[in-house]
Length: 305
Image (cartoon, rainbow, N blue to C red; front, side, top):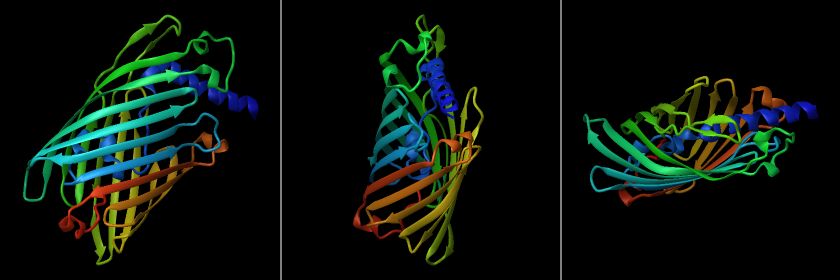
């Protein structure tokens, strides 16, 4: 078992080395409450300032498993403009990566019901890897050279079509694919392009019950398409309960509570169904959202997204 465990650790590390910055972007189960992390056009779409903090610990019990913290702040500025800031700290094994991105959106009204937002983002990522903190040792030269403060610029864009009860989005968080040859690692390193397609609807089941199905599709060159499907119910505009499925990866339970008109607390647990199930007790994710609403906005039903 120990030998198998070390082999899995080695595979994870080799994937990080051979792709350098190419490890996939952090994944979130509660993406419907953290939309700007995947689509810059979301910035300001709520109509008021929103601050969202998220903590995710993945594959609990697996040494060196991903651990992610994110903070996003966005707000409308003027009539049609939205601005946002996103900060992410992502750790996996001996690797630490920080993201800082500024987001800009411009919104036009396309009908009596829908608005279309155009978004762009710019920023950078900094990667550090300390192999002495890893769990695998051999004489492979790829594990002998640390990576220190390698910087990758970020330029992304997105579209976000939304109404009071539905939304659809298409985005590329980063168009840049920086490629260089590292004579120590003896490999080409590149950042892969991620394409996200998201969508969701809100249906009134009864006076006190709302239903929201949602999806997130992620495509990365050289990797299988990943699809997240979720179904959430909101009761009495306070309690949210639901479930989701990520293809070939996990089933999840999702719960949330609207503490006040301004504060929302959400939690999700992922039950791993991949081969990592043997070594992990699942993944946990907590999200806290603060909305700076006016008195008029606070009287409206809580948003599902």
